[in-house]
Image (cartoon, rainbow, N blue to C red; front, top):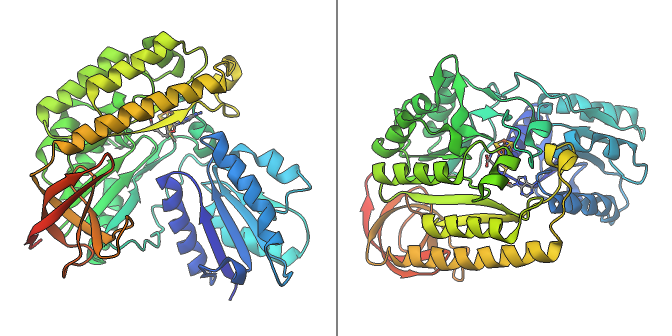
Length: 443
Ligand code: SAM
Ligand code: SF4
């Protein structure tokens, strides 16, 4: 039995796809191993969203074969977004020791691709990077192993073409799974003991299938017995109709947490980015969400240093962050991506030193806001889903997440993974809440 070692880069969708790959290969007689040294085949599931992710993968490719102490030949495959985005470079560079590449819609063909490489025993590079308008892997159950939260991709691809973003080119057109199929997978996960599911999609709230929308899907998933929490990521601010906001606010199983990517607070930059909303529309949406759901946790994504972004325009982003007060934010320097509209039309003209200044300023601001937000929870009792031993400081502690997806740490006690606890918050830092367990919930 051939052994496969799989390493994943990038977003949660890639982590999910890696579980699909494990499932497909497992069914075809391959064994998944945690030991790279024992593996006959090493697969890198790659990300192309920002330049530094690519760089890491190129470095990694070189040290896989070099790392073989016994000199045995390892088959190397590149999966994911780099396979579609850098197909030519990967296939034609004679110095890259890779055997095959497979794009995000080709994972069912992996056994064949690997088989052909091994069958040839040759240096030829095999590939399949065809993007499909239909592939949703709805007939593959990914091999999830977390035990508490399960991810479910309900849609794939993206039709939005934000000018900075490579996703429409690497993952293709938007397509959704049927509600019945999603619900069937959620039922199976509930039977396996999962208490929380996170619905995934590049633009998850634009989910639509024969007249059924995302609000309908959330409600249907919430009817599955055993599932107590539903999260979703990543939504686009343009797709929050009133009905969806009502479901989020009123359905007790839908967590009161929304990731709402702002990208920029300046209208000219938002238009250049093709985000299809203005600063005012974004702020109005936040106000509407908070009216319906006052305690909702909001997080965001920001890009600083988009081409031509002036200091004043950057200050508009600062102002929106101050006004909204996000619970957390992922802040990125603009990184020019191949094929994108921005690369073709707007030179990457904001110097790196300016990008660094801006990112430092925003990270400092967000740290202060997150701290202030967390301090406001002191003394409150939060419902926490136990995840694992704490990865911070001490093995005598457990960690879990509250409804707003914040990390909550507490003393170990006789609790177990997947249990719901009531925890009184006693301490706050910008990233973590600490507390004491006051009750165990019978859910
Ligand atoms: N679909 C989501 C949305 O509409 O915002 C985001 C998905 S994207 C793969 C994840 C995040 O990466 C984006 O929100 C953006 O902030 C960041 N990102 C994407 N392309 C980028 C680029 N070229 N440079 C820097 N950051 C980028
Ligand atoms: Fe990329 Fe925009 Fe699609 Fe998000 S919505 S995946 S940022 S193109």
